[in-house]
Image 1 (cartoon, rainbow, N blue to C red):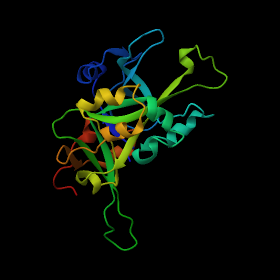
Image 2: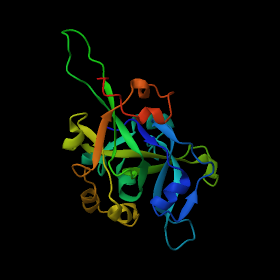
Image 3: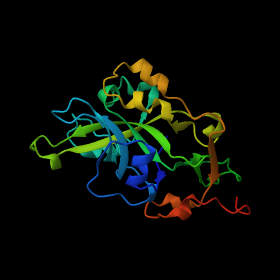
Image 4: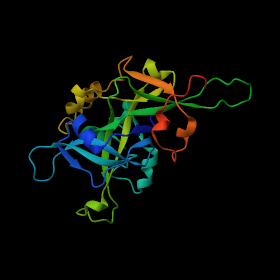
Amino acid sequence: MCGRYAASRSADDLVEEFEVERVEVDEPLPADYNVAPTKDVYAVLTRAHRGEDAPHRTLRVLRWGLVPSWAKDPGIGSRMINARLETAAHKPAFRRAFARRRCLVPADGYYEWYTPAAVEPGRRPRKQPFYIHRRDGASLALAGIYEFWRPADSDPQDPASWLTSMALLTTSAPDDTGRLHDRAPLLLERQDWQAWLDPERTDADPLVDLLVPAAPGDLEAYPVSTAVNNVRNNGPDLVEPLPPEQP
């Protein structure tokens, strides 16, 4: 799964890196080295506004934790932060979003927690957080799906009544990181961004084919401070490797 990640790049940086054509961001998000579910995050998507002929690649702010359009309570989003690739195209909560509302979620890297074998009988081992990122320093383009939701009694013409939320797609972890956790977020390579974001592509099978784990050797993982366990902690020190003398 993916339950925490780092995202420090500015909107301007993401516009350049992800070749964004339109920015729909009211207030820039600060650098966040401990992004957790229910937080607002940057996402790249392709949509056409009403009255426009062509869609545009757009940078928007979405909430992490997908709220289906039919949900009665937006609180359901806290339980829908990830969607399994194996079932997302068919599961009622995700299938409409997978068919037409796909996005890229830029990240510096993400965290996974490794549980070592118990060193003493009856003693629970302490989980060790690891930070996983691209060796070349580029952003990870995490595969996501998004959805629109509003309260039943709200005005659909009022933009403020709408909540736009997202979930990250996960798959079986590749060998490089599978030793840490059996699930990992799916990544998209640059050559596949346009196809993944295209809202006119609705056939699930070709879309699934675009989603593959990172190639062996592309990712680097190393242990970091347990300070990341607390969502109130933040800052670049969270992604610093532990000194060699620390286990």
